[in-house]
Length: 494
Image (tube, rainbow, N blue to C red; front, side, top):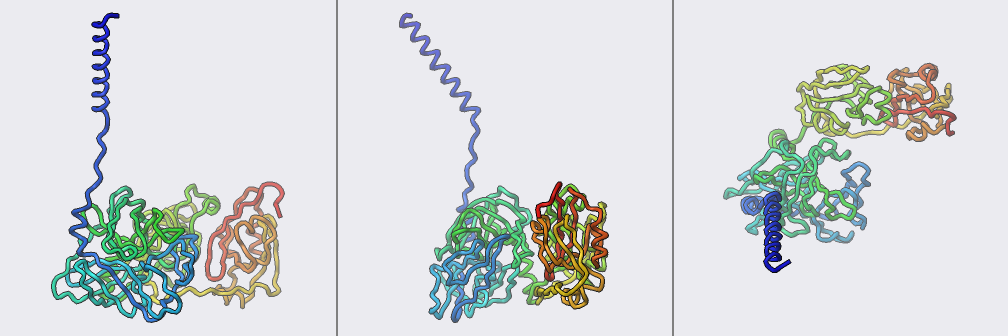
């Protein structure tokens, strides 16, 4: 091949490569640019404050945790960090001998006349509370009111000149994947800005301390001292109050939780109007619809909340709700899991009507319930069960348990009426043992039929056979719950 031919071939190759590169360049997607948060920060940073609460002596630790399966928080002198911890923002834990305790957190101004929002756990029980503004002014704050269950506190400072306030957004409009950012004082570093996305909304942590809050979950880096600070959307509006993290170490590990601003502002409104926060109550206790419970109810889906107890005299009882009903929706909002129900009921104004969709005997129906008011001093009390006195016994070996009649004293201790329930006197097989049943528990229903004697229990279980799933309503202390026991095929492992 001569030089001319080689030169021509080279030109063809280069042209082909250029064309290929051009086609590739045209087909390559343009990567979207990351949002610029500078405008949001410049506008809103003056509305964020550093909160400092001081205590005489040692602040008591309530041992609260905020997640299903999470251990209780240790005392403040305990070196072990809790899994779900509230972050007080303390640079270092004080020794037991220290007479002064200081808790650091964040907050934000919600009105020009000096109202400030933060977390209850930042200021709870404090002797004095001060806030530091961006211009370095330090003002004494008064705790106007707070609510531990929502973990919200409302502060007030004297504002001779109008203070810069944030814009309040709509947390109900948030969707997973949206950008959000936080401004706060992690570890005492004022006006630290972090960003991330919404990971989930309506996240209920299954906490006994905060059963009425459905959190916003984000991956925004949050640490101790961010508590009470604002969570902003891309429009610069506050959509949440940063409250908790999930961590094995006490530091940020990619999972953070914020209280929806709609919930927080409802708390503010009630504190200003009434001085306290009221919550709605149906008058039922519910549990998750597990696979065994769903099978026993003969339903395909495990969604909903199974009613295990109905409070006498409550709106639920007056409306005809009963144990064994499965709540599928509340005021048109689907109940995917039992933890979805308390936040919806809690935010319903007491005295109003609520439409509850239930599944009963395989059929859906709507029930109108008048919502009551949760007692402000409501506390759970556990009743002991004395089922060890001589009584008639019966055995259901296929289920792996033995039962006995209850006497009047035992029923009185449990708050049961005459003819309600049979006591479990022994566990002798794997189905009951695997389900966690214990001697002293009380069986109230078998396959949604009430049992009040050994004879009734024997009649209700006489036809069970291998492979069947039997649904028991079991009382443990003052708590009732459904338990599904599946009879093994073949010889039982006893």
